[in-house]
Image (cartoon, rainbow, N blue to C red; front, side, top):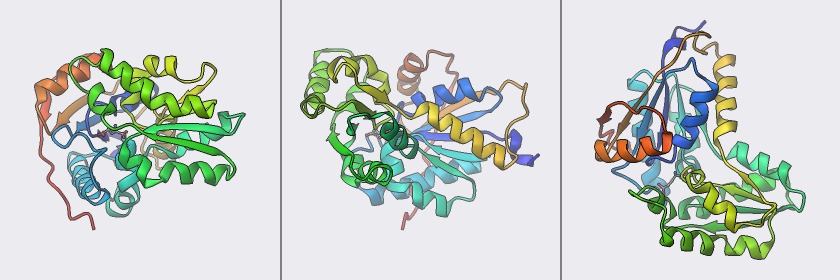
Length: 274
Ligand code: DGL
């Protein structure tokens, strides 16, 4: 067994969205310890440039490793699209991102080969999902919709009001017009309003999100490297963020629905990202 087996898994997102990934990981990998970082001072990532996101993601990765992380999970589609490859070359622990597994799952689930994507502006503009889907099925028709403002609306104090309903109705309109039968929730914040989205996409559409697949990928990677925490132990989890810890704790615990503990405030800085 690798001596790092007892070390935590580092997870990060621009805010609370990555909790939808952490939630699956806590259920599927109960022996592991997790350290979650929400980059709330930089939120939202969706309107940042790829260069900015690479520099910030590298600094966060370095901070997680300095805290002992044996593996880093980029629990954010926007950061994955901009910085996954960069992190994999810069960090000396395995780095796992979202997107690949969802693209594959979407192609497998679609019978009509009409696939919808809801994601941030930066993720849609990167073209990453479109490329990954077409790598599995070059003939699949992808309707990609950028949803500016949706992640910030989810991450505020009370997301459930008429404004968010209107936003979801508008952003899903192209998916209804295209008659998609599969919809990728291409931002880790969006599963938090899954019920709302479900009401506005075609009734038989399958919604695909990242949590479950990522937990499986983490388990496989740790097993191959002999870094799985010893079975039978009960892991723990802790939180840090770059913005206001009290606000992060309030919103985060509402979504996680588990005890949250203290939140440490940290500024990881910016790496050169080049
Ligand atoms: N949760 C993030 C994602 O998966 C991004 C939201 C944002 O910061 O704009 O894309």
